[in-house]
Length: 113
Length: 176
Ligand SMILES: [Cu+2]
Image (cartoon, rainbow over all chains, first blue to last red):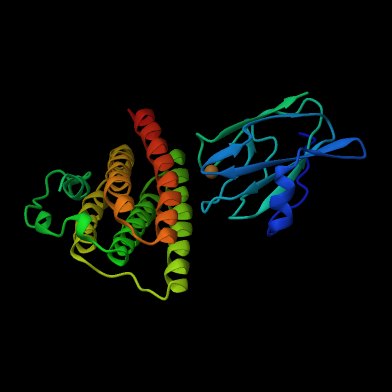
């Protein structure tokens, strides 16, 4: 059990989300909300500093469907179609390295801060 | 003429295509003909992928084939949506017809292979095919496309297909 939970998925992201993405992570109850955009077959940012109980929302801006999947598959956003997003919650000791199951050369990392 | 030759000969050494290369130069195609070639090229890769899913037991090959179907279908859906928005229809042409004809021959050939022989042939063809199509899209199509939205879609598609090329290269290496 990874302790990561898949919060939500498959929500169309509008202008409000795009605006949010340009802001730094927002604090909420002391925990930060981060966003990682998938654009041009890259995770942006590909390295993100996170702390336990932060959330990370992955949003796909590509035509091709993608996933964000732990390198040991202990957590997974599931398939993200164009403009879909999914949120995971960070826990201590989780697997940091992740990739796209469909495009294995796409890689990212969540580093403990 | 080099790109056209490359695409016609991609992975199909052994076939005589002297007649086919008399087809139009890619640079002479208009946007709607280019769109048709790209649409056909996407569909050909989807057909190769279905063949791989029907024949191969190799998990890497099967996962790759599923990605080809998923991605090329997504790109084609965007292409059709854009054409509908522009009120245009892709135009059949000599290059797309040659592509289809050659793909048919290659599918016949690959259909006769089984096991590791099929996997190797499929992987090598995916590498050669993506190399040839990417070269054509990058060097002949994108510089000649007039409509900005069509050009943007081709650029997005090219980024995806370059990743496929890298993935195919990895797969070919693994099968050696
Ligand atoms: Cu991907």
